[in-house]
Each structure stands twice: as C-alpha cells, then as structure tokens.
Image (cartoon, rainbow, N blue to C red):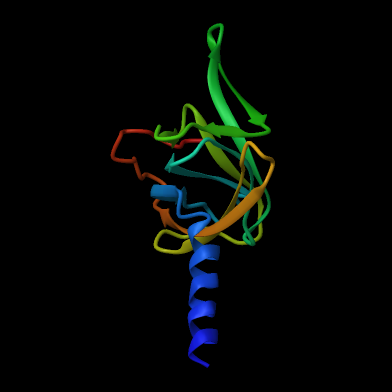
Length: 153
C-alpha cells in the first residue's frame, strides 16, 4: 500500500512538473460592458526551456486567439499569429501594443474581481505539447498594468 501511495505521488509530481518550467506573472483580463463580445488577456511568460506557445482556450470565450500589434508605416495594425516563441530564460510580455490574447465571442460579461480560466498550450522542439490552466483575474475597464501597458481595444 505504501509503495502505491509513493508511486502515485511520484506520478503526480511528474505530471505537474511538466509545466512547472513556465512561469506566469501578472496575468489579467480586461473587464467588459454587458454587450461586449471581446476582451484581451495579458501576462508575462518565462520559460526554462525553448518552447512555442501554440494555443489558448477558455470556457468563457468561443475562441481565444493570439494577436500581435505593431506599427506598419504610420498605422498600428493588429493581426492573429499562429504561435509565440518563448526563448529559454527570457521573459516574454503579452501586453497591449505587442503580443496578447483576444477572448472572442464571450459567453458572459467579464466583471472586475472575477477570474477567467485560460488554458495555454506550448510545443517543445520535439513537437510534444503540454497544457496548463491558469486563473486570470479580471481588472476594471480603466486598469493600467504596472508597466503602463493599456489594453484599450
């Protein structure tokens, strides 16, 4: 019985340590008004190994897309991307004005103080994929992150 217990603990530790290599800091999502169907989610990611963020999903949205904003000529353009590289040991900030998540076709209003589950999927160089779910706090419409990034879209 003791051996089974220790085997179960070891198995759980291995399963949970797979994504322990990704550190998620300061996640947040923008609150919405009642009829609004989109919002943004932002955070900073730090990976211990080279991986690529390839997907995200949430039960509160019909779709979650990864987007990038950048200046093209004299206009700021936003476009969907198929992945975001997370180089080992380098923090990657997902914020307005750069990479971020778009929560599309929201199933309910996002209210300040709520938390939104967001599942992130990364792919390793060997094509192995791993997922983790985080709880993303919803911040007020006028919230400005500590770094001064404003998610106004």
